[in-house]
Length: 70
Image 1 (tube, rainbow, N blue to C red):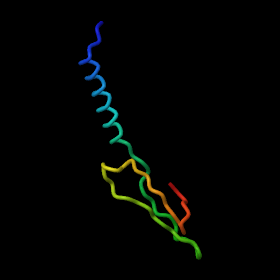
Image 2 (tube, rainbow, N blue to C red):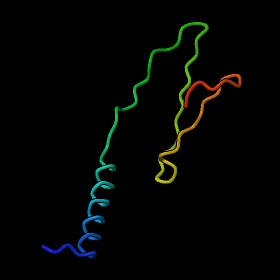
Image 3 (cartoon, one colour):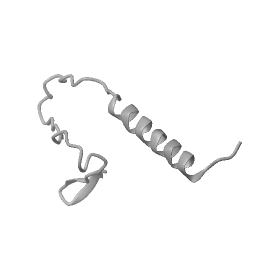
Image 4 (cartoon, one colour):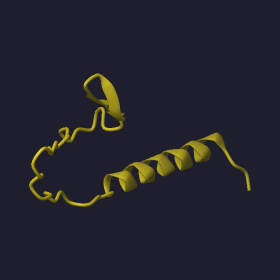
């Protein structure tokens, strides 16, 4: 069996397409609201719009100039 460059490229393209489509089918838990915060507590929702470009980016969350989450 002779492996050619063309068959290798076709295989790689097929694998990339399969992995891309598999990633599109991923689902996570649906949003559920939590109880109203107690006195002297707060509730902050952090969200961003769904978009293809920049979906893998992460953002830092700062509170009083201190990084809390990445």
